[in-house]
Image 1 (cartoon, rainbow, N blue to C red):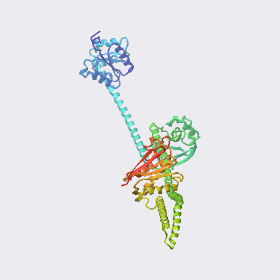
Image 2: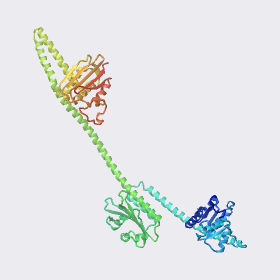
Image 3: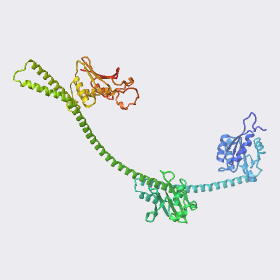
Image 4: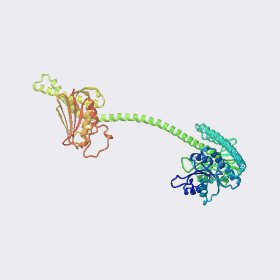
Length: 611
């Protein structure tokens, strides 16, 4: 083994193979890798030059027939770079003529190995070149070899020139096609913008189909779309006078059934259409003529997947449809479909909007009528409630009125006597006057309370109020209106030393009503109402002997909106619904409301300052 071969201590020699045939490269790689060499590969001359300058390999195996730069040109280029002087270049060539081998040597190669390579000899051939073997030109053959190389270079340049000219011609064709496509697309974009505000379906059809007819130079053009009933397809046909309606096609027509079965995106043209089932049917329908170049473009529904929305049928003489023209027809058809669907949707929305507007006007009128009826009903309910209350109050006023009548009559008799009344009779007169004053006070208090309840008098105006009198009057009213049963005992214990307070009568009347309503929640057998307190505070308590309240509910008894809180299933009863409102009323007077457990039922206490 020579010094150029890989040894146990020296790093493996680096070999670069420039070969455009992957199978040849894999054979070279397998043979030389097994022999211990570091292998690299490039698939064309330009990449091979760049890789060779970067790797500086010990040996360059160079295929002569490479795309782009030929092997001869690669060798010439690398030999012009002084950094590649130490790299051996061995040509791999299938050319066996003497002139070809001499050309390889004159361009800078150090030798050549014939292709196809012999697997049994190849490694030895490579090691021989790495060991110092060089092939030489015979004396006097350099001129002939150079002439041969020059001729090959000229031929190669001529081929590249022709290839460049052909590529330029193709580029010009592609450029012209791209410009044509750009013009088509520009006109299509302008069309799509122009028909956005159009709401008439016939005008949309005329514009889109008219432009498609001109763009593709069509002879015949028909467009069918399914009717709103879903039972047939209606169509338009392009004529010299414009677009005219065509006979309808039922959904059961063979051409419709066939088009429905086609995969989404199918477009048939040329021989594919001629060999399909609908060809003869299309001729019978006048969609195309036998010798024309025809096209059939089915359109799928966007809302009902798999169903046929419509189709375009067109033809022209002699000129087959190109892929871009088919694409352009599909774009026009898509714009047509979207525009017509949007027009229908907008029309439907307009009708719906008008209907909603009419409905809203009717609803608004109905709402106003309902409010009037509600006000009338409220007034009627109030009249009814007040009527019942007045009837009950009238019955309750019969006793004090009868007392006034009887005592007044008795007093009149005494007053008509000519002689002055004696001491005993004067006592009777004073007692009658006391009864009359008490009855008058009772009647006056009940009437004033009734007027306040009816929203008359000074119901919402601050005044000086005797709270004990208010309690008695409101209890009578509560019994009169049925909130407090006549047969339910109410024990009064009015012990507060002061009961005169400046405030709004209805506030305290409403608060008392909430306390009584809470007591009635427990279905009690007896209610106790007492007042007490010092000189600066007034306290009123209402205690009932009804059902008990779970202590866990005491904390939330005065929270607002009790109906919105989750229902808690507990034994016993819940706090009264009016306690939060009672708390809000008393807050205005600096008062507090408490709910306390009692031996039976519950106790609610209101406390507020008198100053």
